[in-house]
Amino acid sequence: MKILVVGSGGREHAMVWKLAQSPRVPELYCAPGNAGIESMATCVEIKADDVAGLQDFVVTEKIDLTVVGPEAPLALGIVDEFRKAKLKIFGPTKAAARLEASKIFSKNVMAQANIPTARAQSFDKAADALAYLDRHELPVVIKADGLAQGKGVIIATTREQARQAILDSMEKAVFGQAGKQVLIEQFLDGEELTLMAFTDGKTVAAMLPAQDHKRVGDGDTGLNTGGMGAYCPAPLGTPALREQVAREVLQPIVDIMVRLGSPFQGVLYAGLMVVKGTPYVLEFNARMGDPETQVVLPLLKTDFLEVIEAVVEHRLDQLAVEWHRAAAVCVVMTSGGYPGSYRTGKPIQGLPSVMTGSATVFHAGTARRGNAIVTAGGRVLGILGRGNTLADAQREAYRVVRSISFDGCHFRTDIAHRALGAQA
Ligand code: AMP
Ligand code: GLY
Image (cartoon, rainbow, N blue to C red; front, side, top):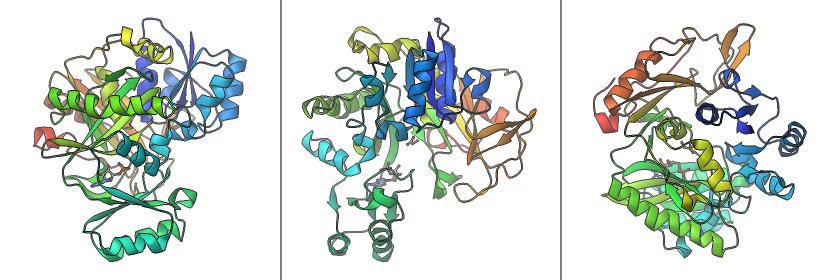
């Protein structure tokens, strides 16, 4: 069986790595992939958002199944195009992916399904947004409606900051079309949790709860990033809470999408804020999280390929999705300066050629230059450690992190601190 994974980050490396463990031994391809993915899949130079190019490749190479990693091709309608051409693909249609691609659409769906979420109001005129802002308590959250590569959310502690965010988004168009409409949202003070689920449009199979670390610095300080590390299972996501979110959030969303004529198939990601034990939805994503995937997939006991096929063939109700009773911690190593500007092309030293123990190196922004592997992005590597407990997994991850280096390398030393308290 030939499988194409679309994307090039740590998430896609983890997906390829997991698929490579399938007893069905699929032949793996990745577009465009990276220097780490190369060791387990044939990488092809087609960009993740080149839908026509990907379709041509899949037809020519007779790929049996395509698995989409990032949001951009989903928002462009890759699933709709592939389905029209009768090509098997894992992911939601463009209409269903609006749960991620439009925060206003997502809010409206949540309101219709009675999902607990932060109170919000949408605006398409800056003057109206500014007038509403005058009456809003602080802090206040300003969100660009569309996809803005994780930069479209501003938490403003002063009215001036909020005003600026509204003007930047709606008038200066710093996010382009994505920021022409904004949401002004109530600030929720709590602890964040990610719960993802596989769904075939009808049945929901919740994954294990994970926690991402979005801020660049130790102790959750500094700028927001794409994610500096993650761990799973997050103790905050107790079995009772996981059940509650599956029942009160994930299943109702899947059900209402059917009623709206846009059934959702693939992975539904709920970004939650748990406030005094009560989960509120901050956002939905229409795909797996990065770096959450790097800690959740390693704990999946059922063959990932079986799960994907059950989703694509609408028979998830007939599959028991099982998980290992273990723990996983992933520490992201970034280029110096990230999430601001940074340099690339720095040789990476100390990459283990053979993994020992229960650690794994996932590549994110890497490239091959001759025999060397060099940095090629902001997030460069994600080091996974596994163990019976989070403490074991954390120790294992940092053991390998500390053996790898490159010029300007940065990483957080406290991934999983909310669960473990102590620094590594
Ligand atoms: P989003 O893309 O909507 O998840 O927002 C990005 C990040 O902003 C989230 O992971 C939270 O850390 C923060 N955030 C978003 N909405 C809120 C809110 N209503 N209250 C507090 N923090 C928020
Ligand atoms: N880790 C957050 C995301 O994937 O959007």
